[in-house]
Image (cartoon, rainbow, N blue to C red; front, top):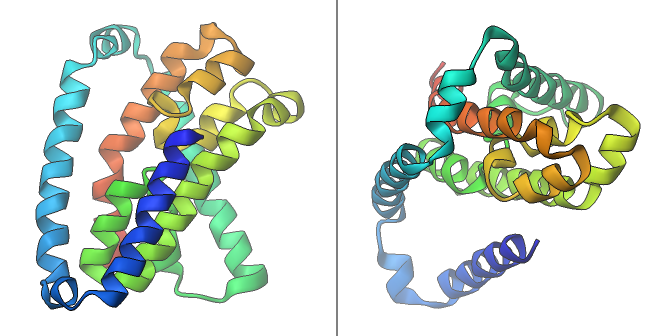
Length: 200
C-alpha cells in the first residue's frame, strides 16, 4: 500500500510540475516516454531472468496452471465490456487495452500514452493502480466470498510482486507458485496485448 501511495504522489507531483514549468512543457514527452518504455522493458526482462523462482515455475508448469492467467484475462475483458455496456459507452478497443495492463500501471500507461496520448494513458495508470490497491485492501474479502484463487486473479500482473505478500497471507503459501506464474505470464503479455488492441 505504501508503494502505491508513493507512486500516486509522484504522479500528482508530475502533473503539477508539468503544468507550471515551461522547460518541462517544451520537452518532447512522447520521445521521453518511448525511452522510458525501452528501459522499463529491459529491466522487466532482467528482473524476470534474475528471479530464482522462474526455474522452479517453469519446471512445475502444466496446462492447468495456464487457466489462472487465462481466467485473469477473460475476467478483466468481460468486466470492462459489461461496465462499458451499462455505463460508459466508450471505444471498446481502448478500454480493452486499458484493462490489458492487468495492474501493471507503469508499463501499460507508458505504452498507451505513446500510442493514444496522455488522456488514455492517465486512465490506464489510474485504472491499473486502482486494481493493485483494491487487491491489497480487499484480498481477505475476496478469499471469503470467492475462494483462495480470487486475489491472484484480482492482482493480475502484480501477483508476482507487490500483491504477493497479501495473497500469501490470506490465500496460504500453497498458492505461491500459482501467484508467481500468473504474475510472470501477464507481465510478459501486457506489452503485446496492449499494442495489438490499439493497433487493430
